Amino acid sequence: MAETTIVNNKKAVFEYHIETKYEAGLVLTGTEIKSVRASQANLADSFCVFMNEELWVKGMHISEYKEASYNNHAAKRDRKLLLRQPELRKLASKMKEKGYTLIPVRLYINEKGLAKLEIALARGKKLFDKREDLKKKDDTLEMSRIKKDYNKYDS
Image 1 (cartoon, helix red, strand yellow):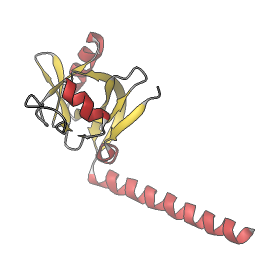
Image 2 (cartoon, one colour; image 1 turned 30 degrees about the horizontal axis):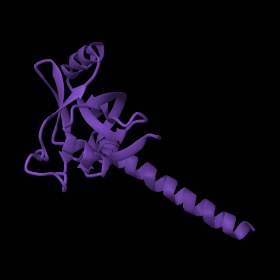
Image 3 (tube, helix red, strand yellow; image 1 turned 45 degrees about the vertical axis):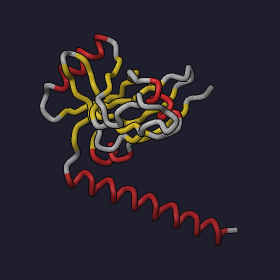
Image 4 (cartoon, rainbow, N blue to C red; image 1 turned 135 degrees about the horizontal axis):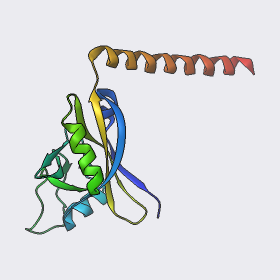
């Protein structure tokens, strides 16, 4: 069974400078994992926080499972993340520094069939950094168009 990406947080790369990434397990209920496998999840506006020396993800939306009965899960509940203790201590110390935040980048199902959340330690970008990224993206798009047109007439 291959690794399957369920959701990517595209805004994260645009909004933040990503420094390091970590793979965290998720504590999910039965209906939540079924919804995740059906690609019914969204990482927009989600973030990670420390509560009682544990790492939690807030704002992650996992839709309710359609075939579930009355004991379905809440769509935007807080979910606990599972990391090793040294990683948690390291992240907690970095979070105390000014400008750092933890953001979810990718939700996926690994080879063993377990749901994993890739989180990133990141710093927020300034407005001029975002403009620079957009300019680079436009330049590479324009260069690929020119190269494509050149190859078309070269033949």
